[in-house]
Length: 338
Image (cartoon, rainbow, N blue to C red):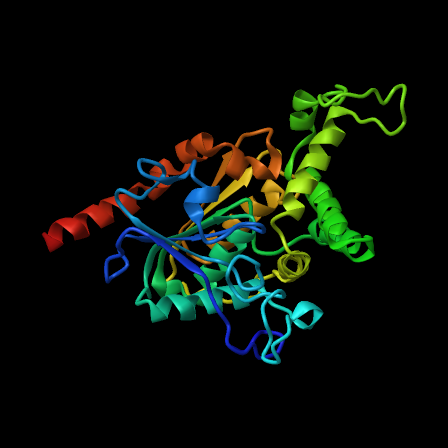
């Protein structure tokens, strides 16, 4: 496939997970787009929101998710083999969120999935959801973008740049990706959450930094732990590729087809300083100004950006009414078939 940067990616692979049985007309099919470190296995990382009886109720709808292009969980990325038989590595071409969506569309079309009742995602997944509304407005009923807006601001680009630099200057890949994760974890949380969880407590594993310079506070131990477990599951090349794709995201000048446009639902997170809720709100207003149905809700939480993962019950309460028509349509279509 030809990418937005002009490069051609040969033999692109997309890893797809499907839960349930989609209707041919897509009336019961929900596409979930994953965030930066997610996989296509939605129920493994968003089990609080997707599954039997949950907001994305797999008893009533079918769910599909595609591992994003550039990732390391089954889809083609920097760790994949290039046509010459060697891993792409640094040769992997620049991919954008739009490239991810176009690859998903092609892969899903081969499976017979051309229409979707909704596309939903948070963070990078929310960017993909917005891009779906622009790339294929006629194919989607509803867009739900959580903790995401129509571009990535300078602060986010700056923080990603520091994380990538940490990877490049580290002594080992594991050390670099662990440090990048520590930086990222601070952007995903809020000061209020860290103060409540850790305050100035000494490391629960032992030690006293007031007496020994190399001993840790509890928050330091938390970051070390998060970095270590992340280094075991994430490829550095994929992290570099996906964070750059986030940086490049800016669809403010893209035309949205107003005649066949989906309904847009945006969710900002009150304590999110990586994706400021005001920017999310502004995006909802810009789309509404085009004559497209576009709503905004705010998830009040001190979890920061991670609230869309950490507080599924609050998110479900916020979105239940927004997604109710989706279930009504799915049930009506199912009744007609019987």
